[in-house]
Amino acid sequence: MGIVKIDDALHEAARRSSTVLCRSINAQAEFWMKIGMLAEASPTLSFNAIVAREIAAAHPPVADAA
Image (cartoon, rainbow, N blue to C red):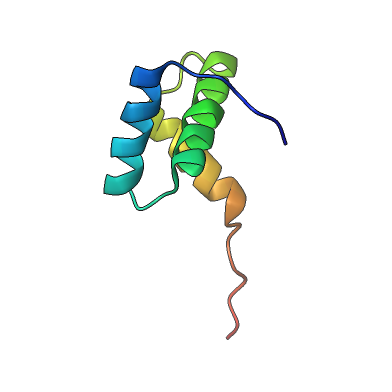
């Protein structure tokens, strides 16, 4: 864990977004950083495609219990 210095305007934007999305300011900033990192690594993917890929990776299909 470390400390990251960000511009006051960016901090305010993270604060506003975190309120709307029910995240802490740190969680909002971490989300933006992660999505930005993934976007740089996969420039042809849209935001929605990146999020869908991350959700699929976090929640693998559940085997049918029947």
